[in-house]
Amino acid sequence: MTKLEELIKKAKEAYYNGDPIMEDDVYDRLEEQLETTSVGTSDGARIPHMFPMYSLQKVYKGEKDPHTVLKQWAEVTPKLDGAAVSLQYINGELSMALTRGDGKKGLDITDKMRELVPTTIYSKQPKQITGEVVAPKEIPNARNYAAGALNLKDVEEFKKRDLTFIAYGIQPSICPTWREDMDMLSSHMKFAVANRGDWDRFPQDGEVWRVNSNFDFDKLGYTSHHPRGAFALKEKQEGIVTKLLDVKWQVGKSGAVSPVAILEPCIIGEATVSRATLHNMAIIEALDLEIGCMVEVIRAGEIIPQIVARAD
Image 1: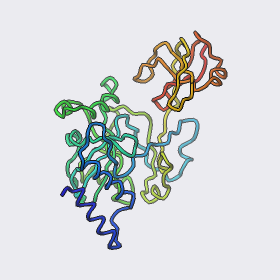
Image 2: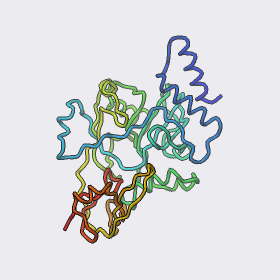
Image 3: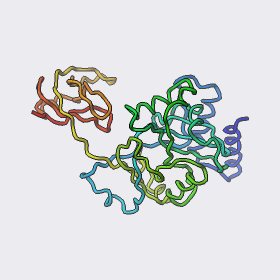
Image 4: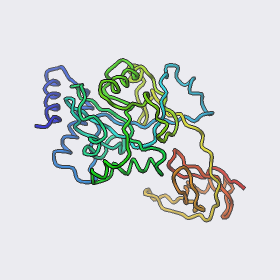
């Protein structure tokens, strides 16, 4: 019997005895995890996280003063730009490591993460530790380098990569405050943590602001996408100017037809951009776009290329 099977059996017995040891939704995800792994996971099989990995709401400097958003937001750490990962420990042993995926399910990368993180922790209670796998910013396309390493088939090749795991969360929490949780992860479990150390050698894309009190954080709850007790503070992007070469029309999955700008290739961040969404004809008219004009382009959310203005 695996440690996960033992935990589920123990949780089921505790539930029927009227003394549950975990929330129902956590039990459901672990049971689904067991069902998925018991039949063997093929390439691409998605496995549930013990706890969902939510994304952070973005707040841009100049649009809203973060000091006025919530007075008890006292913890500020760098927002590291790498690949988010969850680590699952049962009876103090690393039992599963997953990519973030869609935040609900990820890919099994346990064999590789064993090379980066402690395989045992002192806690006997089931825990999920979340954090970022990062590479030094001197490496070209450091974010893609880190994310790509998690997809390697060869563990020996993975071990050659210059990678670091930096923890920023543990669930269920151990201490009354997030800061104390990070101290515990650092001092007693030997993790690198987001609020300890100089992480300037790794790429960053803003700051993370978080409620320090774990009770207050949990009380604030979540939207369908974000925790209400934390947000990412970012600099407003400056657009890159390039030429609009053409506009093509594409059919989306829903059947809707939308325009796509064909651009003279330009570099935004670490990516080469040659296409950008225009959404609909109204956007083209509002921006007064013409073939051959100069346009200002950003990557919305550091991901999706978007024309924000005509630049000539």
